[in-house]
Length: 381
Figure 1 (cartoon, rainbow, N blue to C red):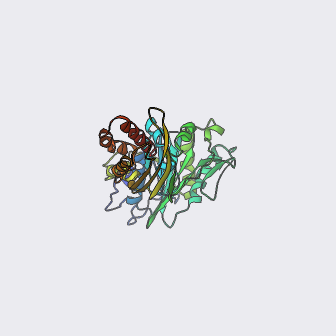
Figure 2 (tube, rainbow, N blue to C red; figure 1 turned 120 degrees about the vertical axis):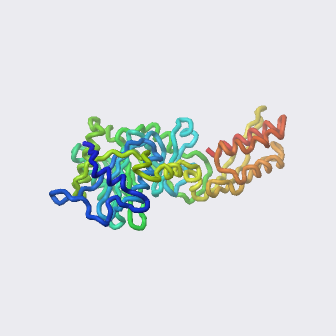
Figure 3 (spheres, one colour; figure 1 turned 90 degrees about the vertical axis):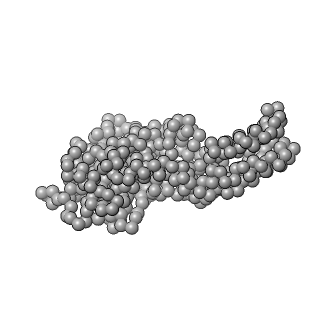
């Protein structure tokens, strides 16, 4: 059941970045007649990945979590979410995502890359830093699943994943700790599109060298593959019930809309930052690309070139192209390198940057330069 009580909604709407009155430490938390804390369980109305990630950050920044925690339940339309310290070009198939209209988001927590769709549930456990306990949070999930489907063999691992039948990953975790607060979020695969997951969670670019955090591939399964009668509302009710049991609370679910600026002041600006190229790609740890480009001109003449690019903050700091002089004059490969330095490591921006250089040539040189430009752009994913 979803509660829309004035008390709970006022807790959410009274928060601001200045006063942090939500669950304020200046007053005692709400207590039920049996002595349990009221707690707060929120369900997002939005399926926009940027709005929901912004809501996480807003709660972490504006809610006083010293007295009682918050559980946020949310789902997204198809999207890919990378960890704070990851490289999107090594983690996901950017061309396939563009073709399918699947957005990419970088969250503020660490961990690996995940595919979200409406068949995946995200749970975010907010607590004080002192109360941070990922295994306890995962126990909420595993015990809820055992309660509704006792035949399911589920357990949490030391890596804070949840495995089904000791092998299939149905949940992965990431977390973020601030000075006083923390949040731990995990996925839960209910009925996700595994074909789409496999198609987009593969590298875009060959030859990347980086110290970015790599994802650890695992075989995955959906809960519905093994419990076909487990529907969403039953699962959600079980999770809320187990959360209350585990933490001694009596919270009901409250629907919230992260697009509501009056309820969450400043959240639109936060979502816009998460959408920006500067955050999604520009925050990638420094990396280099060293790869071989196969070249074939319109007459079928073949050659190969070596590309070496250094990228910092998503921008090409240096670019070296080693192209056989009998296939293309070094003057032109050098000019192409110079044009790319200072540009974003981005196929669209690189393609736009080389247009003027292409117009400056004609005939066979223009044709071969075009082939080289296409190969360089393709190497950017």
